[in-house]
Length: 185
Ligand SMILES: CC(C)(COP(=O)(O)OP(=O)(O)OC[C@H]1O[C@@H](n2cnc3c(N)ncnc32)[C@H](O)[C@@H]1OP(=O)(O)O)[C@@H](O)C(=O)NCCC(=O)NCCS
Image 1: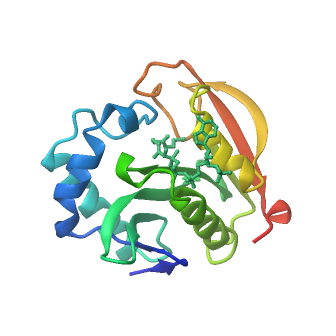
Image 2 (image 1 turned 135 degrees about the vertical axis):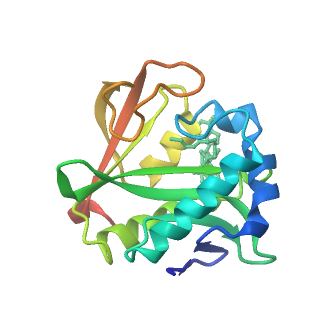
């Protein structure tokens, strides 16, 4: 099992004990509307499926998906992951969310920096992209701070990490891109 530690966060596999918090944090339209994949409403069965999925991902080696836990207390605050891009072993799409009580503390910036370093380091990636709803200025700001550049728009149907439109129904996503040579750890 892979664990990544930052100053205040532990990126680790999900455990059964995270399920109640996941259900509470993802049954929040303020979080879910910006995402494409997690169901809304979000049920215990959805959380249990994802806990097992992430455990399997870690057991397969070279983990790519993590719970974001606040190290002080180990409370799960959200999730972050890198999904390999089809047809390009050196590219991956970054996705993440934090429960609303955990916003505004710099946790997303801390987690994104750590997983990007892990992706360009241990995973040997050359390029990481992220896709945001055009109105998700908060998430776009986190990416810009990390050095991601705007790389155009895709219709949600052709976007790599969002095979669906975001829950709020936007039909395009903004693409942000960062190359290993551009990353300033
Ligand atoms: C996007 C999200 C992960 C950000 O988490 P966070 O921990 O609050 O982020 P941080 O505190 O690290 O950074 C937020 C930054 O955005 C800025 N910000 C906040 N609201 C903003 C807004 N409306 N427009 C632009 N910037 C904004 C903050 O000032 C901060 O920047 P700073 O560090 O330069 O001051 C969180 O809001 C979330 O999970 N949202 C719902 C799901 C989601 O959008 N996931 C990403 C899908 S692409």
